[in-house]
Length: 104
Image 1 (cartoon, rainbow, N blue to C red):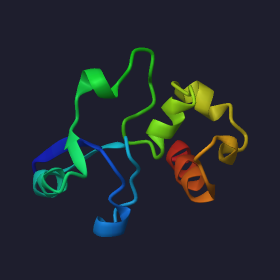
Image 2: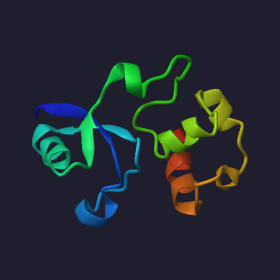
Image 3: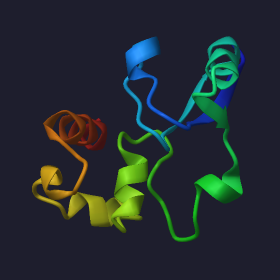
């Protein structure tokens, strides 16, 4: 299966039932990626725009854009948080997704 890396311009949750946020970057089958891009929900991943210098947060980590917005650039900084819901914009659901990601 051929895949493509895309960055979400807005959340696809309501229309496509995908649990991603604006700014999240994922790799998915080309057909699905093209459908999301055609709908204006995503754009092709751009290494320079989507991975600022000094950032080691994986592209697929839930809530990545929110984490970056609040200055959390590294896995070490992220792991230092005891309660992720203290980060503005991250609720219980996203905090759980991040915790599950960190524990896999």
